[in-house]
Image (cartoon, rainbow, N blue to C red; front, side):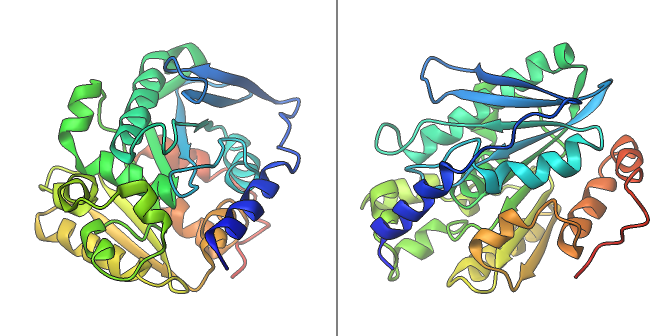
Length: 292
C-alpha cells in the first residue's frame, strides 16, 4: 500500500463523528498555546474535578497530518478515564513541511507549559500529569522526554511518566541508514547531522522521566528500535518498561481504554506513579474484569 493510499484512508477516518462531550463531561475546545491555528488543544473535564490527574494525548500522522479529535485517539480514553475523574487533554501541533520534527517537539513542550500554568483553573493538578503519544506523536514525546534542553527552553516541569506507543524511530539514525518508507525522508531529510539531533536515543543521559514503551510485533523495526531505546535507558539508570504486543499499529492506540488486559497493564503502571491516581483507577467497575 502506498503512502498516498494510507494518507487517504487516514484522512477519511478523521471525518467520522468525533465524540461529543456528554452531560457530565465539559469540553474546552481549541485552547491556544501559540499563534498558529494548529497550536491548540482540547480539554475534557470530568464532573466535580478537584486536584485532578491529567493525561495529555499526542496524535500521530507521519509528522505531516493527524488531528487531536480523531476517534481512535480520543473516544476510548474519554470513555474510560474522564469518567474515572481524570482531565484529558488532546493537542495539535504544526506539521511538516511548515516545521520540522524538532520544532514539533517544541510545540508539545509549549502545550505542556500551558497545561502546567492553567491546570489549577480546571481544578487539575499538573504535578500528577502523564503524557501519551502514538506513532509520530510517540517519537515527539520520546524526543522531548529524553532531551533535557528542550524541556529547559520551554520552562516546563517534569511530569510523572511518558507512554510511548509504537514508534519506529526511537533510534532514528539506524532506521534512516536502512531501507525505509519515503515519508521518513519527507520528515527528516537527508542529513545525518539532523537525524542525530532528532533521534531520542541519542539524548538519553540518565535523567529521563519514567517511560512505558509499547511496540507492535507486526511492524518492521518497531520492536527492535523500542528494545534498543529501553536498553539504553536502563544502562544509564533511567526507569523504562517495554511491552511488545501482537497488535496492528492502529490497534496499539485504539485498544487503549477498552476493557482489556492491555489497558489494565497501562493502568497498573499508572497506579504505581501516585496514590491518588491509584485511588481513582480503583473505582472502576469490578464486575467487569478485563478481557484478553
